[in-house]
Image 1 (cartoon, rainbow, N blue to C red):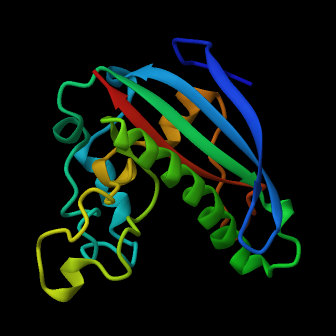
Image 2 (image 1 turned 60 degrees about the vertical axis):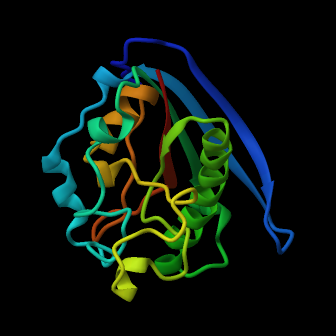
Amino acid sequence: MENNKITDDIKTEVLKHSDTNGNEYYIEHFEATLQVSEIDSSEKYKVACEPCKKYSKNLACPPYSPTLSGYIKDCRTAKVICDRIPLEQFPEIITEDRYNTAFRKVRGLLTDELLHYRKKGHIVAGSGTCLACEQCAIELGKNKCKHPSKRIYSLESMGVNVVSLTEKAFGFKLEWSGCDSAADFVSAVGAVFCK
């Protein structure tokens, strides 16, 4: 495994999680601290959000989301967090739905952790579209978030190259499912920013 990050301090653990139906899952949890200057972010990466069905329909998504530098202000370090789950834990679910089911599991855990850090006064960023509200205020013709304390911008919505970030922080590549390949793991990546 090639590791090109500056620090070798990666915290890893396997978490056992039970959902509301009593199903148990094992989730890999990774944490590493990077300097904000090591994070590859640019307005050009926000373009990757355009094909998403939530583009311009969620106040936490482009074109409404801020840039990373504008959002985190003078924070200097970031605790990067990745929750990763093997898709093999969902054999009863048809292939097309496996990814979404797995992503909902890891993203839910990541969101809970990020909201815990936010309550302690930290700036946080998560993964995927904000789901704080069933229907975003922008879809109702309003331009102000109804629950700003629950809104979580995703790293990608602020122009972070999450593929590069994961490789730099943890030394592994994010996996994608497509026409000619299937992922073995689904990941949710977030960060906690500190001054």
